[in-house]
Image (cartoon, rainbow, N blue to C red; front, side):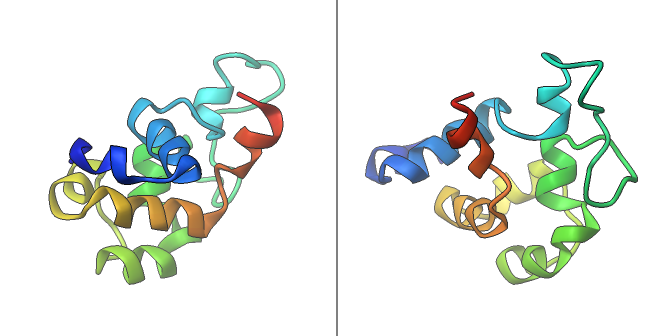
Length: 107
C-alpha cells in the first residue's frame, strides 16, 4: 500500500499523508485544536462526527463519489484500504476537495 507513495506527486503525497495520519481538515481533527469553535460533527450531513471513517466511507454527502470510486455507497476505512489502491483513495479525496483548506491554512 505505501509502496506507491514515492511515485506520487507533491499534492498526492500531501493528501496521502493526511489520509494516513488523520491530520487534515476534517472537523474531528480540527476540534482538537479549536474545541469551542469547531464541533466534531460532520458539516455536510450533521449526523455523525466527521472522522476519517465517516468521510471516506459513510457520509451521504459523498455517496455518489463513493459509489464511483469504491463500487459501494457505505464502507469502512478498513474495507476501502483492503480493497483499493492508495492512488484511487487519493483520487476520491481530491475529487471531494475536502482537504483543500489544509493547504490554505497550512495545517
